[in-house]
Image (cartoon, rainbow, N blue to C red; front, top):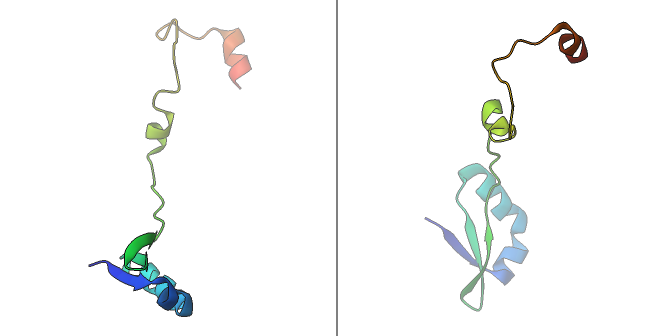
Length: 77
């Protein structure tokens, strides 16, 4: 359940609310005159697969099945 807190109450106990969000993961809605104004939530880093990161980065390769000759191989080293 999301907690709703007024701006004045949030200002007085901001660090306490930050710790609550960090530990529980539940967001807090800060209200202004009863209307939602802000949402405080934990940032979650998305860990992506390295192959997923590379997906779509090669736009075109003319000869994918041709062998690599010695000159090209030396350049790759």
